[in-house]
Length: 82
Image (cartoon, rainbow, N blue to C red; front, side, top):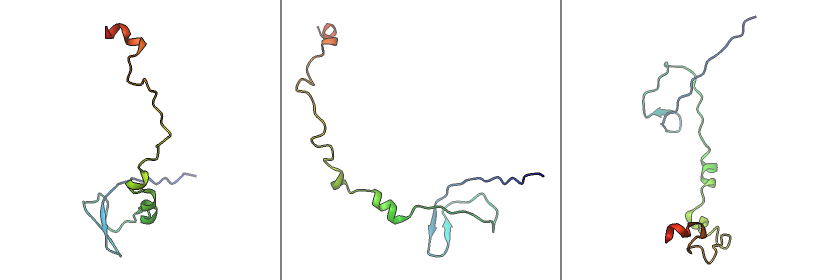
């Protein structure tokens, strides 16, 4: 028996959804009246991932420490500094 093989091509387009139909913002390289698969993120989940800037400020406060001599000369570069 021979295996039937379907080939799929993926395109990404922008479209406007008006509640019943999608209107593409650019030409689509497919035939009329063909079946398409539309994938989009759920608005609620996308919004939950984004934290307001005010919540993300200071998240590393007290977790990063700098030595007192951080800006001091390095022994390894002493000959180049003279």
